[in-house]
Image (cartoon, rainbow, N blue to C red):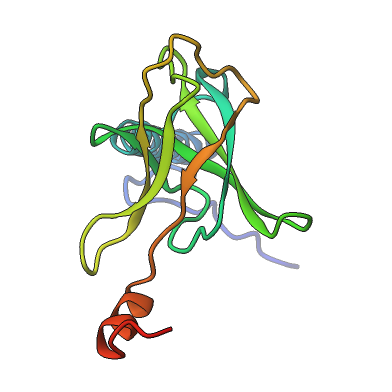
Length: 166
């Protein structure tokens, strides 16, 4: 005859209760989920992330888009007003076509200029918006015609060292 083993006991001396283990797992899971949600909220606020409905898109063609990529800041008077949402090469014009997501509520005159600027000698780049004086404003899908591409530091140094003869 086989002998039946007695029920397993825990440190408290009672039989295993699967419900008490589930409560602990659920509580721990809820705590981890709350921390994860808090982290996502913190990141979205600190990086200035916005919902897709909070922006409108404008486009611009640059001779050289060196230094910018998707996610690069668009700034007006040093304040971030949007980001680069897309960057493609126009095969017909050989220009970099940038799509910029601008915050709703910011009106941009249609004679404004976009420039790719540097944050410093070794810093990153951003798209600087220099507003024009027109009373007509850009709408969703419009194009900024006056642009200035980035200036390569290496090219400038080569001109300086070579005496500017090219």
